[in-house]
Length: 428
Image (cartoon, rainbow, N blue to C red):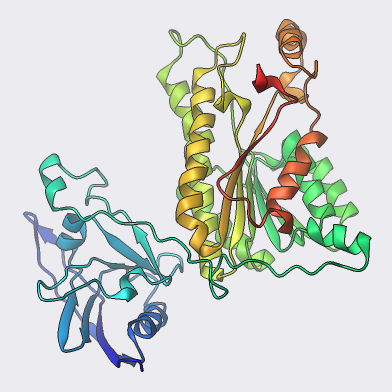
């Protein structure tokens, strides 16, 4: 027997200016009275109501939650939302977001289940100035907790039901089928283009290539469009370090293709310089593109995947540089940026699994691309080959199988993994 639950939601529309740190507001309220079967049902309806707010209205809300004659009030004044250090983000619709900070009544025996329901996504809040809270404020913070899937048939991580096909070729085809649409960042480079082609060969329906200069590979992209006439293939010029640009590009992609189901992040730059001589600006640029840029794209793509409710796959292209110090060239910033991707995928794999999002990395060895050509690095190429049991660099085609695996139905239970593709270089 379900218990009846009700909530009254007020949507503030205007908040006045801040004077001397004191927030004084004149609020016009639109009231929604919600009554549901249980707290999860109410939460669902709150989300629906929330999405009807004006696009420019990002002010907080207040909820009065009543259950078993115990009243829970969730206040979200700007002051509270900054001090408590814990928010819930409800619904992804551009700037249409609701920030709810919980303050439990001392008489309330437990946190109601809707605070950890799948409709709500926990986030860490930041101070008003976007700086980390002062040390003395740490004692009053509330730390979020991860929520794992229960793996039940109704969850986003339910086990697939895969029958044994009577037709061997059909079974093989389905096993590594890639469904839906993909965004490939840094996709106009050699490795990115080869992987795009492979994903399309395995059934990808739509492809959006993000690159800082996709025009450089327009010829190859046109050939791909001709090869796959039934697929939607487009490009966007995107700076992955620009959060707003990435957000807009992802929204545009979702509109063009219909969904975002896969993200493969090839984006990356390298700099070989002695660490004593490295300009700090170069260090920051490499980490900003390789690590922060990868996270910005993953976050933006994951928000669409959560909103769609269909799950998805995210693959970061790391490097053997994340596993060992390269020799003989010094490239500390690149190595650090790629090793950070390994921890990034592990954290996101833990946090986002409950939404059906799998996050993995691929760590290629030295690949035979234009980045590793030229007489100036001939001696380096010789050393790289000598220190590899396979005696050579990798071909771009040798990376595509792993990319397809992680995006395909064959990778449905691969989450938080790193696959090294290096010919055996890291065994030494």
